[in-house]
Image (cartoon, rainbow, N blue to C red):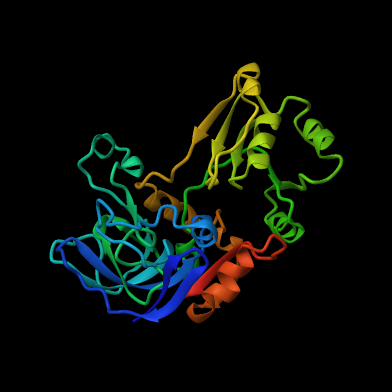
Length: 317
């Protein structure tokens, strides 16, 4: 089969590899349909390896090269003898986390913090940027007719807010974000940005800030513009140590909360939200490309600071 294989920094190759097969009775073989390129994938491409294993992973035993892709929809083509929740032909969305089920974190409902955590497409035998992938039964969630294959590839946890402000220095991405009608879109590089933030929040700051850039300026801005006793969720992955004004954390009684990933039980809930029609998650997709073009039209475009893409999906099958 054809797959996009990650070898290391700036080294992704489209290769023919052996078809994966079911080895255990709780596994599911699928054909990936659409697969997204995540910020984590981009970090790996630019400065990796980071979380992709250079020595055998303690849970999966795999090492580089790795078939990339952990945000994808798929069609079931084969199931193990102990699989009961999906059947051949089902369309599914993939929850990529692979957990041991035995550590204290797993046993207390915190599988996303599993001590031997692995991830399909980052530290597993297969990934969504290959024409076939093998998953555990708990990783697949059936898509109802109301949810498309493209929507299934962008199923990730969502949370409502009374007012949302998006800050992005890239004018192309900012313009794209504005089309969603979620709220105001601002440029942190504008000369009047500080006054604008104070005006929007009436000088109090934001209740909650989600820092998605994984950059020191982004985190510093979060500290600056979050209200007293507010919370900052650090979602973007920092690939090098960040510098912050720790005194402001104390002065403002702020909390910075690390976010490793989603709860592994969230997929059915988010799929139901998408099926309701009230959460048009497919609108975040800015282009769909072919697997052969995943580097030139996907990774290279997305790491360009002046690029115009928001979410790129690869059509795999």
